[in-house]
Length: 63
Image (cartoon, rainbow, N blue to C red; front, side):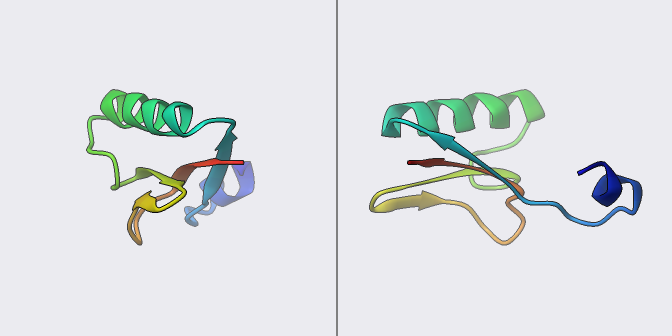
């Protein structure tokens, strides 16, 4: 991660959550703290529902 940041390369991070509610809630909280909408830089992917785009770098998903 540090090498990618130093060289200004995009880095994707996937964070797993045990439950659907956890994945959506944490994605919403992190997106709000970053001042953006869910589905932009921060998104989530749970069964039958995705909120992400090509610019999403931090993805919360269920295990």
